[in-house]
Image (cartoon, rainbow over the protein chains, first blue to last red):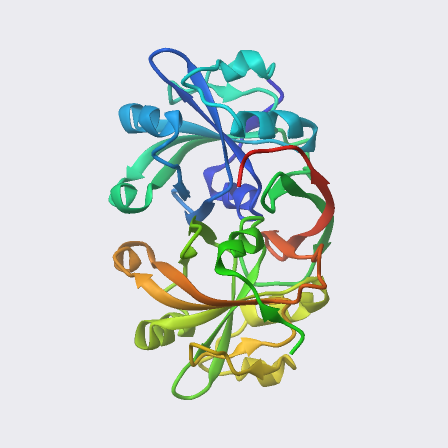
Length: 178
Length: 178
């Protein structure tokens, strides 16, 4: 695997820009993948991630059972897989097989990392108080992996109805903001 | 004002890509502006937005008092203002004046829109159950404004420490995802 361990304090830099992510889980029948864009950082260390996972999704059931998942960040080379995973259900489809993605054993959780994604965050549920009302989970990242060679990853950012903004130029300004 | 009313059902398309936003509020002493990146959509209609606003910020106090704010989306032309607003406190600074931004009367809330931002979302607190534990507010968007001429807005996406990814190319794939 090209990815190396990333200090947990740096996780926010991966998610704060708002990329589409692929959530991988391990169900009883099979591993599954879900496309997701409704997420936010909630704390730096330990990194907390809040996200909405609809209770209509197979991934919702698995996460409620197993209490864990992996949040993987794809780049634009995976555009077809990102949309494909969002347009079918793991109840009827083995998405790893259908979309040619490779499950890799994680180090802390049972759910697999997705090898083709440039970053993967192993997560456990930290707080489920808002799941019933909003399908809103708070995850703690317990282990993070990143391909450090990808300095300016061309992440995808969903603008609705299959339209995505692809990450463009980087700019840098003097700032005290973390 | 160049911005026109936007149907509430389209609000998610503005925030789902994860842009840095400027949160404007109206305090007793003055209107204020806060730079924020930790936000997520939580519902399509009525649009719900979850976001973290630190209790160290002046904006936190104002929002707790007034129960409302405006979430404005800047483009890269406002990069200096975005970083500037994130690096000083409204307790000591009139940020509208200091950064040359123009307050415009909103239609539903008392907090002002920021004219220079291409989109502005008038918000009221919908749920404050997670404020004490996480500084996490759930806002309902009660009125939305957008400059419809900006089809591909060059939004800014924070990657930490003053580094921003600027929105790049648009791609489109056939998708059933909303």
